Image 1 (tube, helix red, strand yellow):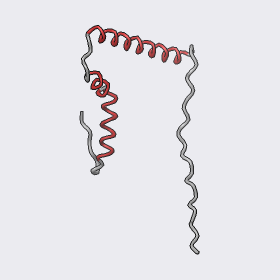
Image 2 (cartoon, helix red, strand yellow; image 1 turned 90 degrees about the horizontal axis):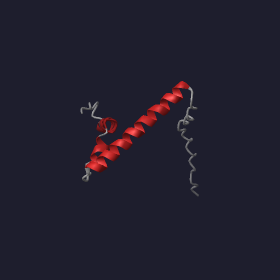
Image 3 (tube, rainbow, N blue to C red; image 1 turned 60 degrees about the vertical axis):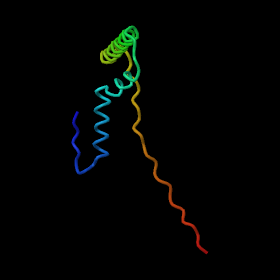
Image 4 (cartoon, one colour; image 1 turned 45 degrees about the vertical axis):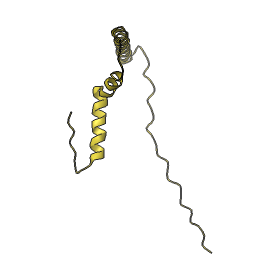
Length: 91
């Protein structure tokens, strides 16, 4: 995996790298490999993952075809205006 660092902006490059690793599933795999997983547990996990993926795909397809209502969209985060500064009196 490769990330370009522009203008010595390491923080931004790290953010991009983490996002790529998240998308590739590296963190999930690292978490799974921390401890030994029995073959029977692995089979049940993979089967449940496959079922979850199939349900998600079917739900998206049903939404696209209009059989299910689309979930409500989230509102974008709105920042509040900063509070006015109160100047201390000097007497």
